[in-house]
Image 1 (cartoon, helix red, strand yellow):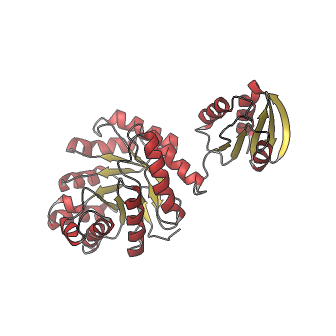
Image 2 (cartoon, one colour):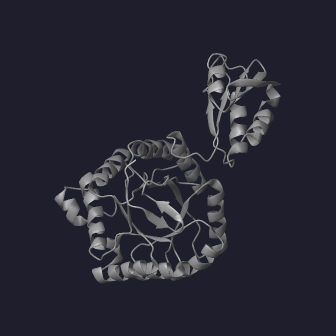
Image 3 (cartoon, helix red, strand yellow):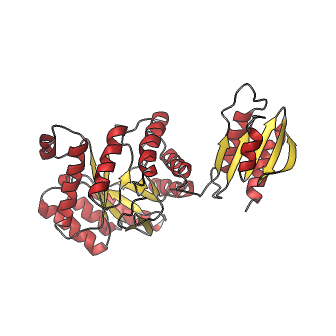
Length: 348
């Protein structure tokens, strides 16, 4: 992993070699305090590290203080266009700002925001996407592309650096997976600020999961990226679950059950899909770092189960429970789920 500068967002470090963090965004109006508090607390239970909320009014900005009292996750205020809202959000207690300095207004207005962030010691995340590329860069590089996106972001960085502000994270997103990958590869060679990565506007659950896994996973496998958000049109809890799964698949996060199961074929003689689904549901909030194999194949099942911390190899209505490579119990098919859940709960 590329060693980037370390930022603190509340009590959560980003960059500097610290673990990759997972973010999502509230969907309720920020001034609806009870609803936002409920969402953020659900995010925390699901394993989210940082929450972001749109601040569209002074009523939203005033709500931050009370939201912070009733939640634990760091709170990022997402501001568009209004520098006064950015200042109000900082004074309200947000842990970081997400802004695009280019749409905040004049240099004097940006400077007021920067001075307030210096005073409160909070970082700024610069956000650039295909809809916010500087016209000068579009003209220079003949359209919206990797170069115009990257150098628009670097223009924004320069504005803050010239004001003596360096607590910066950068996010350059695109709905095109290949573009998202290339812009982050390129900017990673140009600076050492932490990078927030994700495929923006990735669509509904299925397509977003595929696009995000490819885009985010490719970059993380190359050591690029310090914090992630999976963008899904739907329940933000799903963003957290997919984000965590991407990290777990790359061995970058170990705070949940890693289920290995076979895809099923004509050799499968138990209702494996039902078993796997129920085990997944019942273990989704368990934080233990263990690998669990659930196999319905007499060919690969025993081998995979032996390699896992716990495993079930099932065939013809019978399941063999493995622990650390050894068979410890033989159970009937209708006992497999409860037996495996009990073994998981009792494991250390």
